[in-house]
Length: 351
Image (tube, rainbow, N blue to C red; front, side):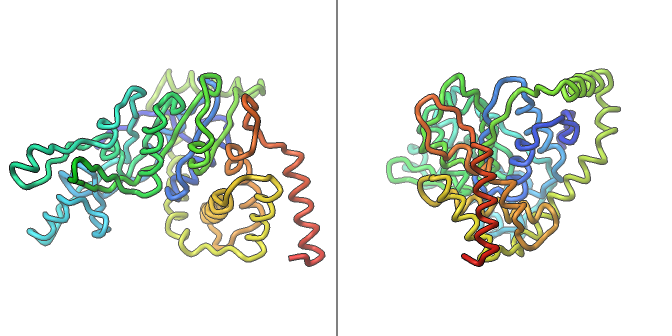
């Protein structure tokens, strides 16, 4: 088992929206990942690795190249399916959730994997060499400077994140394997933007900035110095907080399927999307899923207004219509006016 020695997630100062985006995706990977936009040195990588470290061990099929989940027979890779048919059981082991880094110069073959066509033609069987998507199955795929990747590679990542499956096709030969992962992309906007079509396909987006509050900056320096001085002691100090958070995430995953959202709350979501003039309907769907996920994280089975309101910024920040070079920032006054108007309309029974 991998021995994690990373900075504890609970010890990160500030950056609450970033932490919320990561936690929601940990509870519900179907949200479609999170894009973290901000300057260097704002704890992006630290937060991702800290989150993975606090999540519980996973049971996987022993020796499986894809880390298949033995409890879900319908999502086993071809090798595990054959093994199950022959032996009627699958040997298992427990592993930590992995964080897989995607190299900035990765080719499509390195990402999706390769098929040996010559072997398939000669021997009549498929020989597949796994890529990054196979390594990332049931883990976190971390893509630093995602805006510098080729658009086609980003498209492939987003497709797999949405479908949970990677399919490689070459000359009429195809191979599919599970590729369900939490996609986390980071970028510095000063180095270029993603195309709007790709931006929209990320479930959530967080804009983070260097902390300007002097007390928080002092606390950041103090905690980091403490961590470097005695890593083991610092991790032990925050172990209880990380364990509590890990248990909350696991509890939320269990009750998420039971979370309900009322018609009133759906109208609230629709009116917010209309007022912010976003294109398409993906924002409505993602806001609904995010609100239900937040409700589950807080131990509730019914979505409340605060669940919706707290997710507005991370759902809409990258979906707003904007001019070239205009910052992806939501107008907080506009949101406040919208929410107040929404409450007024509901009070007089307009919906």
